[in-house]
Length: 62
Ligand SMILES: [Zn+2]
Image (cartoon, rainbow, N blue to C red; front, top):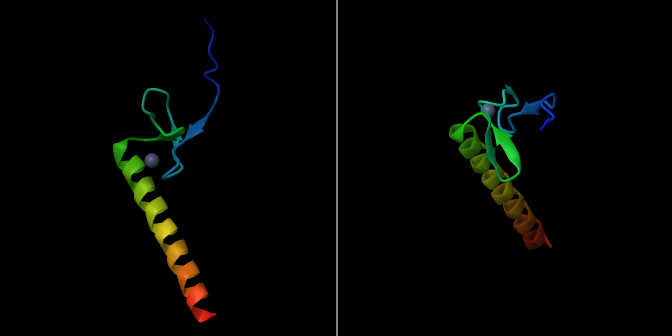
């Protein structure tokens, strides 16, 4: 079975190019390792919280 191995994958957290052996697949995205996955999750959560905060402030200013 021939699989496409020419596809390049970058880590979502640090944008490093990943080798097939090293990549860490989670939630439809590729990461270097668990640490990058955790860092990405943390960043995503913080961004979400920040957005919610800004929207709340907008509503209060009405
Ligand atoms: Zn990474």
